[in-house]
Image 1 (cartoon, protein in one colour):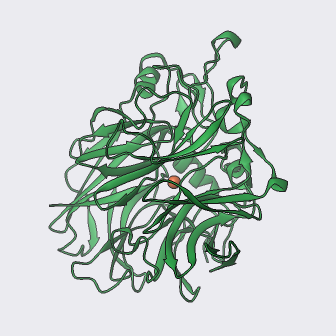
Image 2 (image 1 turned 120 degrees about the horizontal axis):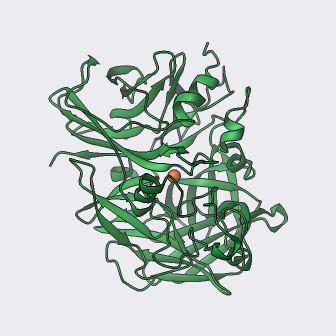
Length: 476
Ligand SMILES: [Fe+2]
């Protein structure tokens, strides 16, 4: 039975500031597989309490990168804040200069420049705290504004800023690009009197959009889907009227409204020519993360980590997370079947398990319907209060699930790393940074993805603030 540790979690995992840290080797319990060599790098919030202001939401903090360097069974750990303009300003003045997801800088009415998505360069927030990716030869820290920060994989030092859409303003993007055949694609939302959803090849910055869909009330979109032939934009009814953003008096996300009567909309876009081949009106849903998508005859199948409504966004406010007995809505793995010939669609819930921050064996199985598993953070059924206290493995064919959990522990996103010569998408390990609220430290957990049993853990002396997304970059 997992005991409630929410208040300890809140203190260590959210309501704090990360220390920068560097240590060549940390103690390892168990045996890390010899084949596992490379850098596990995780992005996420680092500083919630600015000298003159406290952030409001899980998605607001100044970003920090964590690196676990794994070689010959030894593990080094390194943490560094992302040295973007937003962070430098905080360090110099103690003030927030740019708007974040749900926290605005203190400004006079006349200085209310909309820096999250309506930036007047250079007043654009460049705090890329959500994800990491290798795009071309560059290691990038990714956020939701079009300014992404390149970093050095060894030192974690910022190298420079790269704009997804150079010179753009009134744009928002996602921190979840898709990769295919040497290309990296991302969704961009352009706000204006006529707003658009656009797809760009971000491996070639400066190019024209591959697709552009006009939309009157753009939705908050955290990601998009991709099959072999199609891009998929799945928009729930958490939407904004762009004029409202222009005159906003509230932080970015609070200008959005949940309009369930408008339902959801799914666009299917042909990758080869950018044309919309089908559009599906659906029941309302909310989602941060796509899981996988593939074609089956006339059908396009889309697996989505989805909620019935957008209340999860509210539940991630710090004032909600600190409430005793806080209950997060369950995100669930939903499967949409979109018939491109008949234009009919249906969806099912693959598993009733709570899942968020879902991962698959992307390299081998993205766009492939033969995939067998997704892994994510979860609330264990025996203790579904507080914050994510488990790692869940869902068999996407049977809906069966299994868990890893430990008393007082809060695991972050599990990243699957395939064993060399692996047979399938459970033949490997899962890597996750786990916050141990009892010992008040954190460890990199190495799990056997078949059995969900622990293989090893590498413990760092300090608690690591609970984060978002990670990637394992194998040594070449
Ligand atoms: Fe995400």
